[in-house]
Length: 243
Length: 243
DNA sequence: ATTACGTTTTTGGCATACCAAATGCCACGA
DNA sequence: TCGTGGCATTTGGTATGCCAAAAACGTAAT
Image: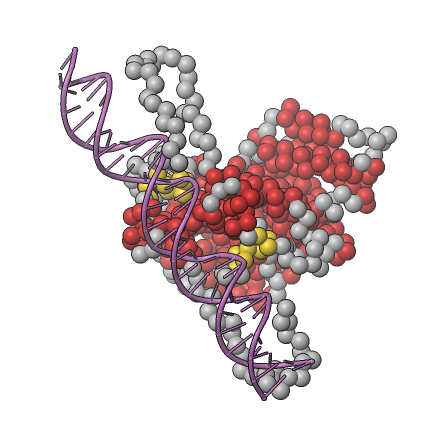
């Protein structure tokens, strides 16, 4: 094995030469198809039509300009993610979550985020914690979140993702991101509701304060209760959305 | 190869006959390969050899008696699970987790389990909660867990899985099962350690008591702290295991 | 018109062939 | 001895073709 032996005083190749960046891995068609399909699925409003949304391998391979093989591998990956379900000899159906499933996911999210909050109180820098306020700097008493629901919704998601990231726990980050992807479609119509938006911002600030105070238990509790509140809200008011 | 074609059976078929159970879906080779490979990976001790463990598509397809196509689809799924990583033009490598990653996973597990405990206090039946003690009925002051580490380890895992199941939250169940699969390999050598085993059983009983008492906060705290204790233990003593 | 039944079409599952990049081996030459 | 270049091999990536199960369609009998 040609291991880079640093003591090798070879005249031909100095260790001090320009940085070679390992070239470009050039993602495979399989991964490209995966990304493309994932994005397409997340973009569409799955809960709009009553009939199940179906995918066709051959149609997809034609549209993406590749053969069925990488498409099928991408489908297999998406199925692992829980985005699609292929029924043998029937077709590939985009999975629709029930309200109960969404609520369940939000609860798991709450669990992970509260743990993130716990970790943050012991490891994150004050500067980074305080920076979380910036996500809401465009809102104030003069510019209420409930009057700019769409914009606030984006800031909201960005805040939560930044919060989790502060935990410096890749597992927590990845798991919550996955959950968020599933919840998001449903969420477009829920988190943005004015009635919840009003209480959202103060709760966020409360979480930040607890983090800054290094109050582990309080931060955990506030983070948990905030997201559990969303779960309860969806459970109570989600009926009008679908099913 | 000409398969013996089974001709369409009876001419008339009454709707009133026995319940047909949708036939057998007969899992595809793709899924069979997925299960087989997953089990094989979990069974082997990945942390035994210094060199990375590699898989070969063609060798696998030959051993399992199927073509490369379903094998590749199975590999794609395993990669989504994080069990393997395929490096283009290089090979498929079984992923080895670092101690830090294992600790991180255990923390996420703690988060999910504490949420499960929380839910259980509000929904589970007393009878089902109490039944959790049965997992440890073979242990007592006369038969200490630390004297039967292997056996206790199995009971331990079964207890945790049963606990999570009581939450009746499919998401929590699935997520923790996934995490457990990853931790398990590492875990064979950690959770079974005598020094931790001694304190494990009392903590479990403490969790059960809090659940029975419907003390949401206490149950959550005990469940969390118990598993976080394992994380701390691995972080402190896991060095001897690998890396 | 409706039902029964045979045919065609569609669709996912699987096998196979070929490609190109990465490696390894080995002969050749300084 | 050591490095160099090239050829054969290995390996994952992709394209294609065929198969059988199902659905879709069509047609004839009641």
